[in-house]
Image (cartoon, rainbow, N blue to C red; front, side):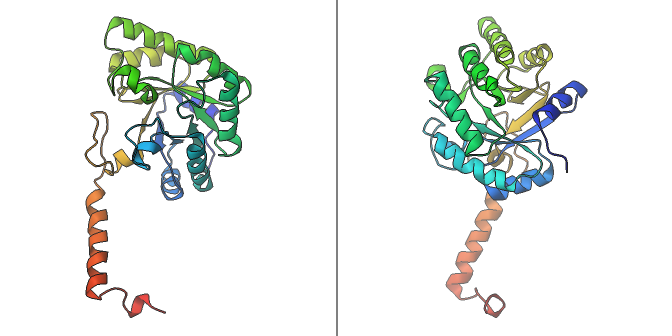
Length: 265
C-alpha cells in the first residue's frame, strides 16, 4: 500500500486524476476511511460542530486538534493527514503561527496543516512553508470568518468578490501552499481558479471542476441531524439504524433478554 504524499497530489492534478478528502476525528473512522483509499484525512476544526456540539468552529483550540490528530494518525496507513489550524492559532503573529503549526506536526504527528485566508495570510503561509511544513490553503467561505461574512454564505457572486478570490488563490499559491480548498463559490469561478493555478484545488460546494472534493464524514453518513447544506450529498442515512440498535439494546436489557448465556462467562 503506497503512502500518499503531497507530491502524489500534484501528480494527480497533472494527470487529471481526482483527489478525495474526508474529515476524520477518531481512530475507528480514520481506519475505515484509510482502508477505503481516501487520499487525504482532514482533522478539520469542524470537529467543534460535529464532535463537540459548538455552533461554529471558533471555540476549537490547538490542543483539541492535536488530540484528534493523534487518534487519526494511529489508524492511518496510506492517507495523507492534514490538521486544521484553528481560530487565533495563526492570526496573532508569524512567530506564533509557526510555533502552532510545528505543534500540529510534532505533537499531533500531522503531515501538513491547513489554514484559512488569501492575500491577508500570504506572509503566514510563506513563513510556515519556509520551515518545511506543508500548507493547504482555504479560501471562499471561510468558517472562521463567519461574523465578518454575516453567516455561511456563498462567496464570489459579484465581480469584485470574484476578482478578490482569484487574487486570494494566486497569493496562496505564491506563498508556497501545496494545495487549496475552495469553499462555497460558484462553479465557473472554481473552474477558472483551478485552470489558473498549478497546485491542486479541492472543492466543497464549488462544483465538479476542482481537482478534488472534500466533505465532512458525518454529513456523508447522515449523522448531522437536520443540517444539510446544498453542497452535501448524503450517501447513507445512519441515524435510523443506530437509533434502532440502541433502542433494541434498551428493550432487551429491561426485558431480561440480554445478556444471554452466550454472552456470559
